Length: 122
Length: 108
Image (cartoon, rainbow over all chains, first blue to last red; front, top):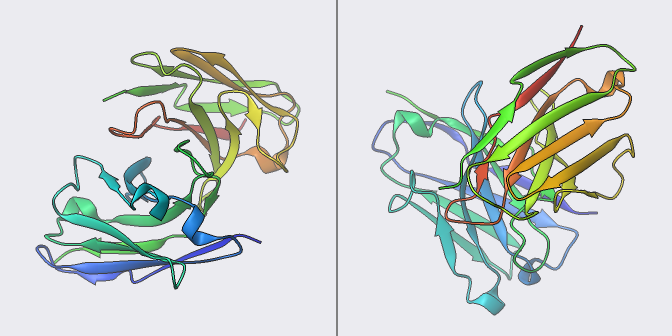
């Protein structure tokens, strides 16, 4: 059974940093790309970014709103994906989900974790 | 960026009703469209991919159709478990991937 679980959320001051972790099981992690999606309180879904699998050199792509501040990485030996968030702003406050696309290059998300809340506030 | 516009934003319906939600893309996305269902406090759940393909394990009362710029999600006979918010997502372009604003299906 595919399982995804985010962790690392919490309260952080504007300008601060936080690293989220997506721990996975139930599939061959190294074969799959992975993504992050967020949802501000009471709002819709917003794609954050994704990382391709190692066969595609683990290249990344980001939404314009986070490019240059957020970095996605992966550790295939631990079946874990990370989201390093720097220079955080109030508008980054959201529940952050990790998502699993199908193999290949179809960028929809067949599986989601339950999410972790990030609050950026002084 | 490809803009995705859903309508209506809110829909009131009764159990047993046929419900249709529309998603329009600002440019052609061919059939690279997914639909999700989200309940309060939960992660989204994939319903449909490639515009009309039913995800494994999803009830056959859900169906998707459309191509290029206009798409619909239809629930053939609304059930109590279907009251939720529905989102479309285009994946023709990942620069960036974009979601519709959502359609909340409420009890009439």
